[in-house]
Length: 260
Image 1 (cartoon, rainbow, N blue to C red):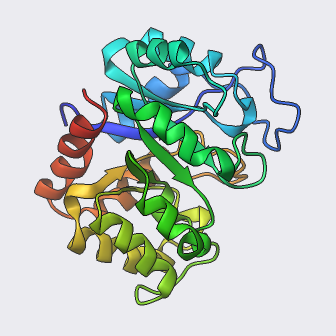
Image 2: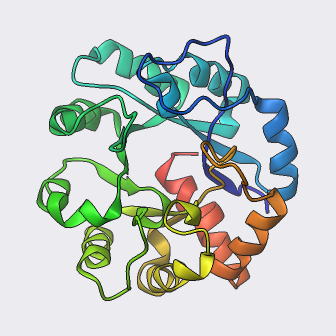
């Protein structure tokens, strides 16, 4: 599908030093490897997301972003000390989001959230958030007050899965109702069985298809038995069973959010 976007992928290269407190050290994979994946999943755009392995050092993913040019956008890791000049430079290179990975190994703590959001607002960035979705009710009020858009990773990453009528999923729906986007990706971060997250996907698709994104989460860091690209496509077609939905989630929504 022309213009289809994978909104969450990484590259790894041991030539770039890992952060001292990194918990995940995947083997090297690069853009040539990813091109083979794209050929199967049918995307020609990508969002490169700085992984926790490299902490605040965005160089590897910026280098990859430059190589891909206008076919890619970036979500990088910045904190409250990142200079405005650096935010401007990253914007010019195609960065459109600041990542907050609120799990062990993440580089930026919660107490930087509001200051980072204020700093990135003039550049049109959003906050991309990954956390145990069971904690969403605890942070709901501050997330609703952010002066920028919000993207929540991995169907909320509820560890383990929750019911569609739960308070935790209700908090995610409240964020979506107020404008947040959710990535349909990495069901295995909640449960190895995709059936456990299917009711949540169905509820999101019914509620707000214009707020959904799709992502491969390639190369599935930390997974010993990752899904194949063909597996990803098969599950994606279960989540998005019509051509109209697939076009909206794969093309229209990311084109708008990431400024392609």
